[in-house]
Image 1: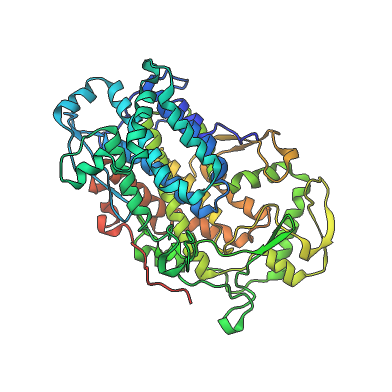
Image 2: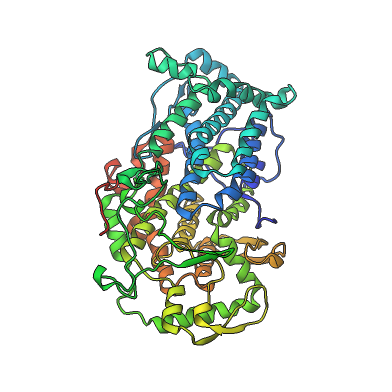
Length: 578
């Protein structure tokens, strides 16, 4: 199907990557200038393999990722970029001598601290003698790290045959013709049989026996993969499916561990009409009631930069209005969806914005204006996903505590058989039908309505991007976007709908409002979410400070917020909802 847009994120970012290390300021932070030169660069062997890995991963993984529920997809994507971050940390030059290599220490709270070990001086000299050698070392390490992560993690819980294509592709790297262009591909391919397929690798044996471990791409990659493997089993998400007996007799990955249950219109459980009710979803003659996806993560997962006080204050500041006229609100939502009948642009936006990674594709246009190095791209992507990940946790906590009903349920219960006029799938005119047959334009996600997770994620992404470019959230920042993918109506796919945004805030607000246009949210759920994930308790400022600290190791970036101790919260594994 045609993809949205502007410039696909990976193609735009990696396609313009040059072969130099990141441009850095006096503090060691990447510089992301908006007025840099543009144009494609002639890539050497190392850059080609990094670019090829990105593009093939994106091509194969994207369809499978779209089948995952939002929080799980966010966690997978964040881990993907942590692999990149770790590879850079493991090979990052520090100081004028260029002799110190940093080892990523992935703590159980998911953060990275440096430094730890140094490569032998002989190998340092070899790597730094030629820029190409360092890039080649990184390319090999990245490919090995991603492959190892695929073997020990993705392959087991995603269970999607399309992911297996990546395995075949990575292995085929070793069978390309031998020349300098494919030097990295050959090295990576030759490493896989001994590194990944056989778990008993020389690196692992040496570590267990207390012997020095070779600082090879394979061993560095194994260390990165093992640390991430340790983290994913201890981060409070219940990926194993057995935390607190959630899997009962067999594993049930990511299932609830806090005992959440829907209380809609259940006086015995202190519930009311305001509470969330599972929506019945039907497909090909079979119907099933939704189950709230990962309700536990906001309470049990590890936060990176929000501390316990931040979490409590942010959630308590934004709550569902005490008095809500639900009849007025649902009529407003239905009237809004009625406008979709003659508005193909809004229809296409709703589907595009529903996938937050497609929303982020537009930022490829921004970075594509520059000759961005791999380091610059990773710095942006990791900072971006740091606030997206944290935003997912804080909104999920708020969703459970507010436990608010969706418009679909309100229409069914309050308006019932009343005949309404609204949009009709596949048509450009409105149609009359009973309110209890009305549905939003796209699928309603299986979790509570307030606050809007999309409004949070879109706002956090735009705010952090503005900050990384040294701008305020509402500063002029022209963005032209082409929308041409519609997952609901094939007849609209491939049609290029143009829109212009003056600021990144305008772009984020457009994304947020699409949840109201499509009928998935009430209007009052949008702005509270946007505040939660931008200005509340310096949300994006703390996220940027942590990224700066992790990149440079300078704790002065954390000082304005109370120092390192003011960052992070490990979650409460003993928490129960009932």
